[in-house]
Structures are given as C-alpha cells and as structure tokens.
Image (cartoon, rainbow, N blue to C red):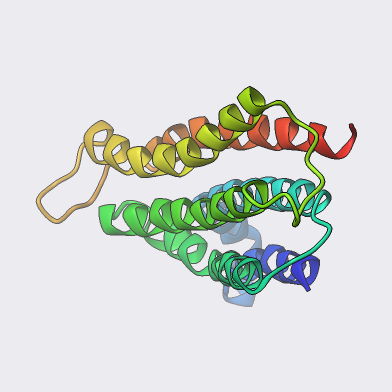
Length: 204
C-alpha cells in the first residue's frame, strides 16, 4: 500500500500544471510566453517531487529492517501516508500563490509534519527490538534519532527564513518565489543525508 500512495502522490503533482488555453489564431504568438509563465508551477513540481522521493527512500530504508508490527506502528505509518497523499494540495497552492506568506507556511508546515511522522515511525521501531533488526551501536542510533527530529525543525525554520528574506508588503505578498527554493535547500540536503545513513542499516 505504501508504495502505491507514493506513486499516486507523485503522479498527482503534475496535474497542477495545466496546458494553457489560447485562441487558435494566437497559439504561435502567445504559447511560448504562456509556457514560460508557468515557471512557478514547474518549480513547485520539481521541489515537491524531489522531497517526496526522499520521503519514499527513507521510508523504504526504515521498513527494510522491520520484521514485525504493532497497532501503533500501523497508525503512525497510516498518518504519514495520509500527509504524503496531501502534499499535492500545498504544491498546487505554491504554484498558484507562491508569493503569499500563508501559502509558504502551509507548504513548509506540511513537509515538517510529514517528516515528523516518519521520524516517529523510526523512533517507535528503534525503541522496540522486537519490531526491527537493527544492528547499530547506541551512539549511531542516537545520531540518527537526533537528525530525525532536526529535519522537521529545519522545515519549520524555513518558514521564518521565507518571512524574513523576502520583501513582503502589508498584504503578505513576497517579491521573490526563489526564496522558497533557497529556504528548502537545507531540508532537502538533510533528507538525503538521513536517507543514506538509515539506508546503511539495510545493507549491513
């Protein structure tokens, strides 16, 4: 089920990019500009696609060592998948209204909650030896555990970065959508590093 949810979420992302509607006699003249004007949607699509792929890689690595499950694990995993399936919505908001601070808050907040739930999955299985085959020394376990909580925090801090780095008017409109991509660069790097470290568990 998990892989199916990821596949559907990734597929739904592209539906936010709609083909421009242009009168037939003006297609040759207006189509290039109309396609170029869709760049905010292209950007939000790429960012969300990469982040969801990182979520999938981390999820796959964690569940690669799980040998049993309990009701708490089932609920945590279900909640995580629910937020993964929700991500196309804030992605669509970012593509359409990315210059609004409230939209950036919703987007970064959604990513933070999603990663937090995956962190809870890791903490739950790592704290119960009967649920997973984890061959790691305690210090490495603590390092990965701390990073698991650090990533959601970085996403939340990115909300503050966007609010302070972009010049916004009284209506909450920010002058640069590029600030969003820059503020999320750190979380994406941490997600990749986290995935690599957790992935090492599976191959031991």
